[in-house]
Image (cartoon, rainbow, N blue to C red; front, side, top):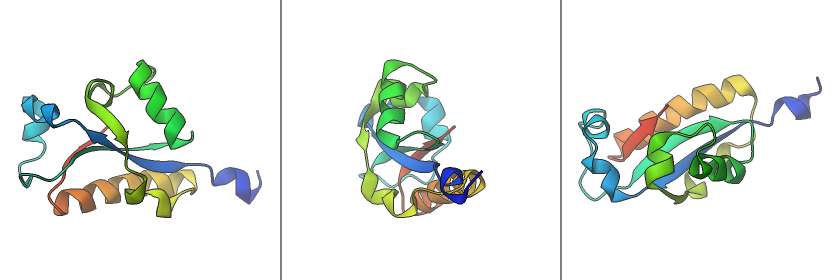
Length: 110
């Protein structure tokens, strides 16, 4: 496999509607949420993030929070990292979620 084909993975961030805060499971996973900060889903994919978001919304391999509460992608939070190899994307997904939580975001990761 050539180097270019290995670097087709992406991290992405989806803004979630404020109604996601009504979900007890989401609230439990975000004890340090700062009132007024955005709610987001952080994921990684081998697809273009726009295609992946559309698949979530269509219910195809979807995360329920994105399917029900997903509003839009927030490329300003992830574009700088993409594309990357698979392992780097797996690690960046976790690191990005941690970084956003530390800033007070409400974060969900699969």
